[in-house]
Structure formats: structure tokens, C-alpha cells
Image 1: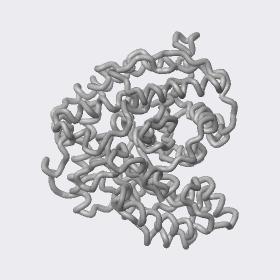
Image 2: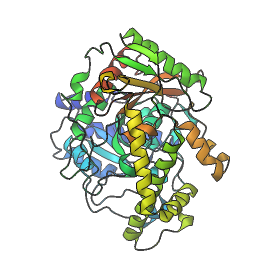
Image 3: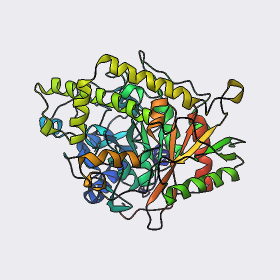
Length: 480
């Protein structure tokens, strides 16, 4: 069989369709890579190798990705009868099994994917580095002394190291895009409502969270979002329908787009992050876009982050109450990491009026932001895309966020993620692309943001940038 280490999911699926490989061979090869490489990265916290081998040898659904191995993030995407521990020690130790499949898990299975296990996450996904107390920290394949990002850090490290071609990820404030930036992957956060949270959940974090994948190629992102972007009856949000499948946007000319290059920073910009954005601007100009300095009104509004924090605190308190119901006992503060103790206490103190006031402030702020992408004839600024750094600096060393103590940890997190959470709250699609590396070989991503519902535009532009500045031939320090 062809060595599939660096073969993307689309090409692996073609190997199965053409008879050049069987699902069992793909699964066995991926398991071998995980067993060999993961001890150096700690990306996978729990395997299901026996079940995966049985599925691969059986009658898999005849979907477009039949037999292709993947990993599921250990947060959400429940599979009936299996564990999802949310990065917590108390669920890990209690061995809780979820009673139903999530809609997303069903879509992955119908597509033909074979899940090999669960990937490491920070507790509750409430920070941007994958260093949970419940497990060893996930290390960055480009330099194992550094963070792989979060909260989808385990998924990103596994894909970047070549263990699997694709992995489930989710994003409530940057958790697809940030680890994609730090591990040199493609990470697209879909429009709100494109991917259903059903049947158990309508919305979380005030509609800010969504699911997707991390991959090494734009075509994989496009093809998978076409398959998982299927609404469920009763969803509180449904994204605008796309004109055609995203996979058909590959190779479509970009055209004369109006692109805003972020020109206002919340602090001292990293030279590498600024260089990454400037290079992206030049590549877009070369593709025929009209590029100019611009920043949406309200992008760095302090009121936004305070109000968003209120919604996160309320959701953490609610989630913990649900876990207590499953466990049949209270979850003690000493079973939680400090930030989640703080979030729970804050959430429990909130009144309904406090919560609704925060939602109202976020709604008004989102309307200000939306004007950037609104056509000029409708009193907007008329931009097609915004380009920003994905993160505030190159991947930090493991332990950096918590090294200054609990009181400073939040400030360090905030300084590192000034660009991503805004678009969870507005619900807009955004993608991180690996377009820059530091002098010492650490990746730095660039974020492109389109108007609500315009994943088609992001895929079209991302594919053109992938062709103009290819990243597929780069390999990290630790890889299969």
C-alpha cells in the first residue's frame, strides 16, 4: 500500500475507491503511527483501536470518506456508549458513558470515517493551551517544548505530526483557528448554525461555539464541511444555504475582492505576526484583490470581552450542573482547574437580568462589527474580507500561560488571543492558514474573515493562497 503518512483525507478516500487500499489497511497504518509518535506528543488521551479495526473490517457506510481514519476531540461529539471526558479528572475517573450519538458523530460516521480515539483538550475547553490537570500536556510537533494551542490542541498536534489526515475540532473563542496557527494547519470555523449541536444541545456560549475539523489541505476542509453542514430539525440557528458545494469553490478565480488588512492592534504587535499579515496582503494583491489598511469598528472593544465572559461563566455553571446530575454527586472546587472554579462561581452569582443584559450588549456590538462587510449602498464599508493574525505571538513554551500565577493567567490568555473570539460572537466564518514561519521554525497563522454565511468565499481564497504559497512540503520536528 502507498505510504499514507502525508496523504490527505481526500486522497486516502480515493485509494479506497480505486482499490489501492482497504479501510483496514488505512486504519492499521494510522494506528501504527499513533502508537509510534504519540508518546512524544500526548495528543491522544484514549484510543478505540479494537473497535476501529472491527468497523474497518465490516460494512462501513458508503460515504465519500469510506475507511479514512480520524480522531475525535474529547469535548462534544458524543458517541453512544462511549466516553467524552471534557478534559476533566472527575469524568475520566467515573467512566461516564454518553447515552446518545450527537448529530455530528452521525454525520462523520455516514461520511465513512473511522474514529480511532479521542484527543487531548484543556478542561472544559476554556483556555487556549492544551495542558489539563487530568492528562499530560500536548506538545507541539514543530517544537515539543512549545504549546500546540487549544482547545483543539490534541487534534491539531495529531494531524500536524501525520498520525491521521484529519481530526474533529471545535471553536468557542478560537479553538479551531488557534491550534491550527500553532501547528501549521488549515482550520475553518464555520458560520453559526452551519454545523448542528443537536440533539442534546441547541446553543452554547450564547451561540458562539461550533464544530469543524483541522486538516493539512483546503480541499479536505471544504469536502468535510459539505458533509457535516447538515441542519437538524429544531436547530435554533440555520446558516444561509450555500450556492453550491464548497468543494466546487476550489480553483474558482478569486476576482477583484476588497480586502481589509488589520491596521489597529490592541497592544504591541509581534513582528512575526505582522510579517505574516503583510505577506498575506501581498499574496492577495498578486491574486488581483484590492488590499487596504482597515479595522472593523469595535474590534477591540473592552465591553465585548467582559460581556462574552459573562456568557461563558453562565455556560460553565450550567455544564457543571449537568455533569453533577450524571455523576449523582457535587463536583468539588478541588476537582476543577482554577479558571473553571472562577467561571462557576461567577455563573452562579449571575441573575437572569445580568445574563440577558450581556447578551443585549453583544448583540448591539455585533451590529457595529457587521458594518465592515455590509455593502456601501446599505450604509456599510463594503469589504469582502478582513485579514488579521490568528494569534498575538508565535507558539509559547508550555507552562507560559500559568507561570505567572492564576491572577495573571487570564491576562496572558487575553493578550495571546485578541483576534478570534469576536467572530464566534458575530457568528461569521473565519479560517486560519499556515502562511508564515519564524526564524526558528515555529508556524504563525493568518486569519481571513468573511461575511456571515460566506464560507464559499473563504474556501475559494484559501485554495488560491495554498497554491500561491504551498505549505504541504513542510514537516515538523516530531512526525510519523
